[in-house]
Structures are given as structure tokens and as C-alpha cells.
Image (cartoon, rainbow, N blue to C red; front, side, top):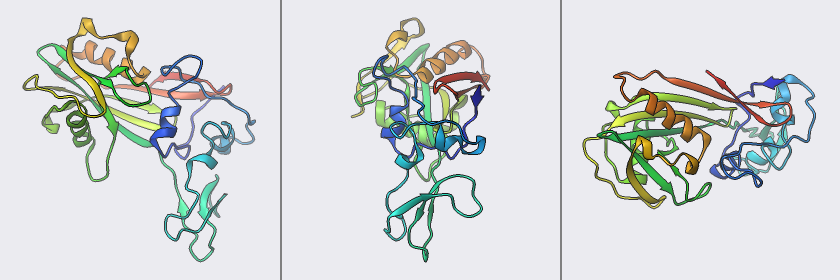
Amino acid sequence: MTFRLPASLLVSTLSVSAAAFQSSSQGCRSIIFSKSHGIRKIHSISNSLFSSTSLSSSTTGPSFCEKCGTPTQLRIPEGDERERHVCGDPSCGHIAYQNPKIVVGAIATYQSRVLLCQRNIEPCKGKWGYCQGFLELGETTRQGAAREMWEEAGVKCDPSKMDLLAIYNLAGMQIQMIYRVELENDTFKAGHESSDVKFVSWDEIPWDELAFPTVEWGLQHAMEMKDKETPVIQEKTKLVTMDGKWKVEEG
């Protein structure tokens, strides 16, 4: 049996998000969660499916109120249906809603070669991928993808020239929006998050050394779409099954 987790099952920091992509027994491309609590109600699955050592809501919310600094309490607010971190001061009562992170990325090419970065940070340090990262406040998804290219690979591009290539929904943790763009030149310079940057032919992509499954999805789809003027947008969703493992669905 498979459940679609509600958006309130969040990962509010990079460190917690990254943990979802790692397994001590199978490496950083393994996606497995443990389940220690039973499913009490369908509408509260996000609070009961995961153990406190993985993605329990009690570990992802703030310990102190973001408005007044009072310690928060994990409880179901009036009129709500799930646990939230609520300010312990009744005169404040601020509710800290936790939401999925937006990840933006770009698969950049120049004359039939694709730009790859070798990660210089965890998770998956030393593995390869395209430029991507979390969307910042005040920027569009295309602007964010262009910024990530500049930060990680020293590459400049016009955000308006990017084509949306893929949307990946990772079970309420992340929504990834991946673009493709053809560069005007092959100038690059590795940023502090990249230990190496290079252009490779599609045949030279190190498929066994890619950082995450989503990276492989994106590159495979980009390769399939490389001769199309307007790409078909790929959609994939990762769902969590009753035994705590991931299931991938199209759309």
C-alpha cells in the first residue's frame, strides 16, 4: 500500500533533506527510510510513518518561537488536523508551518557537450551532477537555476532562455524544477561547492558516479530531448510505502 504524503511532512534544513538521500548500507544513491510507528490515521500519516531518527515532525520544526523566542510545543492547533510547532505563550500562539523545499537546477550544454560538476560538499561528496540547489527568497525558479550555475561552475546564462525540462516531487520533502539551457561559450570556473567542473559528451557521462537518482533521471531525459526544440516535461513522484521504502511513479 502506498500513501501520498501531505505537504506538511517537511524537511526544513539541508542536513535533514540530505539524509533522505543516504543509507549507511547502500551509499548516497540509496533511498530508504525506517518505520517504527504504526499508521493510526490516514490524515496523520506524516506524524506516524517515520521514526524520530528520520523525518518525524518533532525533529524538523523550531524549538523556539520564531516571533517571541518562547519554547514551542508540538500539538495540533485548533481547526488543524496535524501536529505543528506552536509557541508556548498563549498571548503569541505563533504556528511554525514547515513546508517542502524548492530545488532548482539546470542541465547546461555547449555544442553537444553537457556541463557536470563534481560535488565538494556532502552529501555525496565526490559524485557528479548538474548545477542545482535550493531556491532563494526573491528569485524566480529560472533565476535560481542561473544563480546555481554561476555559484557552482562560474557559468553565466540568460534565465529567459531556459526550457523547463523536468519536475520531481519527492514525497513532501522537495519539489525539484530542472531546466535545460544551451550556453554561448564553454567558459567555466569551479566554485567552492565543486571540486571539478567539465564538459563531457553524452557518451562520457559517468552514470555510476552520479550523486542522486534525480540527477540520473534529469540527464537521461535531457539526452532523450536533446534534438527536440521544445522538450517534453518529465514528471516523476517518489512515494513512501507502508514498509518505509520509496516507490517511484510517473507524473
